[in-house]
Image 1 (cartoon, rainbow, N blue to C red):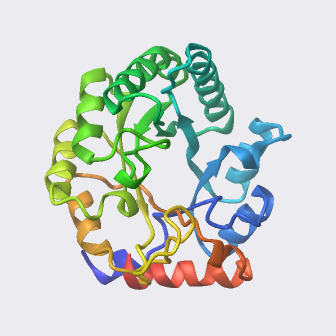
Image 2: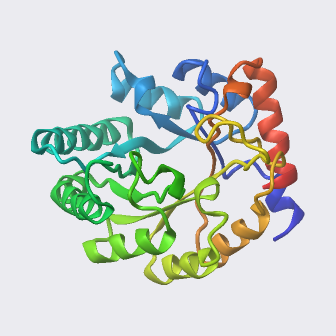
Length: 277
């Protein structure tokens, strides 16, 4: 990969959750002003807004709506909760269509009151139930494996192998995988799993941040690229060797960075992307 590939911002995408204090209008204005070309929209930022008009606003700002976060949370011992999750995922598909993005990232969910096997079966069945809606809307569903520390409530899909198994079992070009380095950097089978995604043409998204050592909060202490121990460029090289040429998405949950001046933080994101991603 050339030096120019690292300094070029044409593939840089930032999640709205990364600059959480900004509303979507401020995020769009500021991202665009720094040359960022992509934005992944978290659903909370759309509350009370005309979603179609918001999508037009993003495009008028020179931004591509890369994906919508998030769908999922399918498993529950309670049948009504499972049904509510299906309904919510159908709403998410409609929101993605209205926004003008063709991708939803799935945080698949888990229920500690039941086995991981039961949760995984319910995830499979839930995705299968909404896949016809996704296909009709032209919206792909990216299964995002989460770090095993989240296996109790946030996701029973914890490795890239499990995500690949799930995506392949669904037998649809609209079901694929999202690779987030925060969740997967530790996996000795990560390179092979990314290669497998490439063979199946189902690597839909690539998320970056860093793992701070020590980390003080398993959810809200993600690092800016270069602050931690994740081999970002090595993993990016695997992703690109597998044929992925989409956006590189900065997704940082950080109680520390959210308290900082967000304009300054955005400048640091752009610099860190150039230097470390």
